[in-house]
Length: 271
Image (cartoon, rainbow, N blue to C red):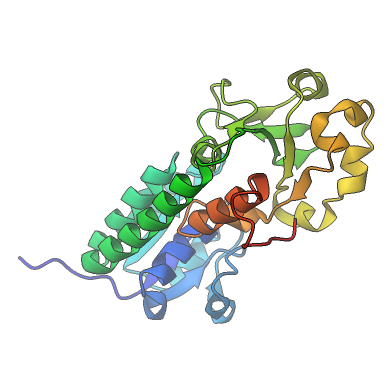
């Protein structure tokens, strides 16, 4: 029996949307979550609510033959139970690493009838990663990076985040790679004690527009940090680091240029 290829797809999170479009499936996407904003073509699609509060009635009204869900953010599990009650075909992605993202791309490609496109996409991404890794590891120094997802309370990624892997590929070390968590609340004293070489601000959601290097540098006691003294506080776009999709590789390339400008000198970047 031939497998039914879905023609009407709804994506419940921005990373899934980006995977679908990167696979050339944009014409089949009929609805997306409210936060999906890339590529620009998604602006004209029906919206089904924010990823943590999907309106299942809107999803059902679009008559999808595949719903692409995710567990990449705590709270998304509520969508899964709602989808089960809805009784429509769905696929759940739950990546923890770059390699999980590649696996997910292959899974989506298989489920949508474009396995060859998925293989080409993954191969291209892997080649770009290897190019970064080979070049970054020529650097003489391996800096430590304090990543900050949220400023109040301070939230940083831990060992179970793909940020660990991205940092290592860029010849750097996540400051809290020893903490067994995807992300966790950090005490300022922990940051001050570990004294990172770089501070990477990558605040989530609407806080992206409020990232302010001077305010972070002015936190009590932070003037003692090597990163602050050397002017190494960087503002990074969350869509290149917080979304487990193909653009994580673009984020990796940007990260490598930020932490090793001496190796990537000709590829200037504003941070």
